[in-house]
Image (cartoon, rainbow, N blue to C red):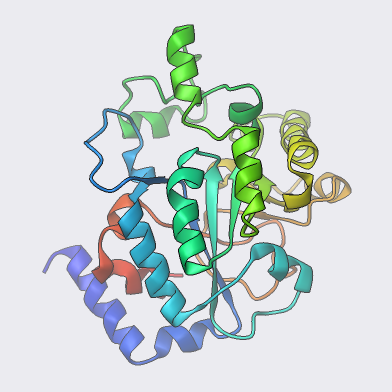
Length: 288
């Protein structure tokens, strides 16, 4: 049996026995998405397609989750400071892609599920795309170059086209006006913050958080999402002074309260293959 088949069988058995839900009672499972794309979209020649899920897959997974767990607002969980009343989940997005408004929001509104979007503010404020968007880099090469990314050399026209893939502040405000979406910082340059100096890391976070509080203040969420999940432990005092109350990683797991591990809160990534494979959805819960 293929490896994914074994995972699916084990997870279905655990779910059927009630093991997963019992283990997650009073805990919050945070899901991470990036891009939500239209159904039937032609295969695009762009990198990091694993970060994208089709809208129907996104809807199906969230509907499945809501039938089993309670959908929770991260802002309310943070404010309450207590464990959820039952097994719960929260939806997050990283980076600030425009399709979060165009494709994800209609599903969130349909299912009445709140979400948090963590913004890489340089792409929004300065219309500065990510370095890997316009290149011909294979995904494995992008992963290798993340610690020392090359300087993009695209034309002005290309830069503008790539920048349109990100939200504008006006679009972010429309997301917030839905009453379902809040915004936290994801760094300004999407720099891996454990690869730069302490001062540089702090300045990058400060800029991102300040822009969010200036541009969408009524929807600001005082949680940081570490870019790429690369956290560090020598900034927590300064981050608290900035008004931030915690940070999210990419480490799988669940949390009881924001205070348990405030600067290393776990999240569970949902990639293209997982979203498109309902047989693997119980595996998402089992490994959290």
